[in-house]
Image (cartoon, rainbow, N blue to C red; front, side, top):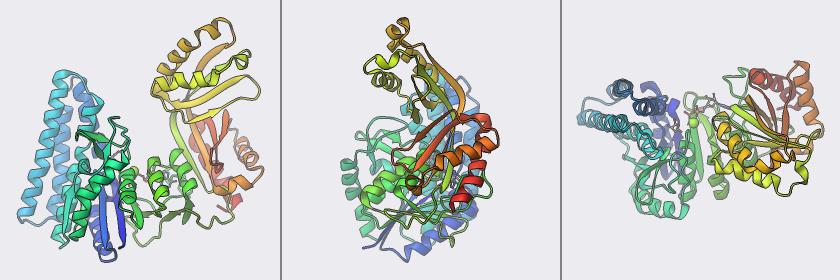
Length: 471
Ligand code: ADP
Ligand code: ASP
Ligand code: MG
């Protein structure tokens, strides 16, 4: 029995025109596969607006969220008016849009009164975009004659209680999918599942992190033992770089799981980084395709694709980082210093994106999101108070406004001197590399550089090194 999971991202369902294209694609694939499951994101920009409404309410502003309600009603009604005929379905879906927006306003009002916004409330609120959109898409599909219903993933994906970045509990999730989704599929239904959101065992709404609908699709893929998972987005698959930064970027027909993992982890937001693990475990091919150009093959990500001769395949960028440095000539004599350093970082819930050790000095440096740097610095200074007093550690400090630029390609491993070529290309245009690290899978090289050089560095590596390596 053939099974396909297709996820439509925000821009693929961001307007009536985009919805109509997505519907065409679903109809076509519904004729090809025995089982088809659709995962849908909120319309583009909707999650941002919901979060903004909640944040401003918590800061004492009771106007912004009301404006958001109006905006969102107009945007969703426009799609409903254009794509659903005046039958009962149209009125029914509009009533459901109203209901969700009313609930959103009630939540924001309570947040305004209490002056407090918890991660738990944020998850309840930020899931409304997916709830609404799944209903709209399922109704359009019904109108086209498909047996389709919206299914809230709170019924399917069960997670821990780490609100805003929840971790799925796979055994419970499998059980729910068996109980709720499989009977629907057995009846020939094409379910439209809400991406991004999930629930705890007690059915409290959680979310899988921003951009997490891709992850929802791969979780469903592995639990349903799908043949393939397709991510529909607004570009021709995974490209040699973000086309918004490098207009000459071209799409990559084939990537390995390792390559996509590095790309996603180091900033290629076209696929959410957590998407990869379930498909690797299930050995499920993942395709990334363009909703506005469905005939384009996009990118196929698989276990062992023909890797070709290229070394560097793509260049990515993560912005908004700080580099923390722990340095001092005496520190290498202190046992367990690295372990204590990272334990102090972890105690603040901060995620470290890159770690390096400078060779000229005795130091440990690492990059993390700029917003966590103050907490991390004070946790480190507390932890190392004795070492600082004894001058084993001279200072603990940070450089702000940093980025990580990463070159990714499975061929990097076998190609000596690639680092030198990257440095050469950057030196040519006067860009200073502050730190370097090699990815654990050895298919990436990451450079820490100043934010002012970020886009220039990406374009320079793209032009000089990718072309050289045949990527
Ligand atoms: P969706 O709403 O479909 O989930 P996203 O905005 O999350 O879409 O991801 C698609 C965007 O990712 C593209 O529009 C592009 O700007 C960006 N992007 C960043 N790096 C890459 C890359 N290497 N290849 C393709 N797109 C990339
Ligand atoms: N709508 C959610 C977000 O904007 C999830 C997603 O788009 O994948 O983060
Ligand atoms: Mg996305």
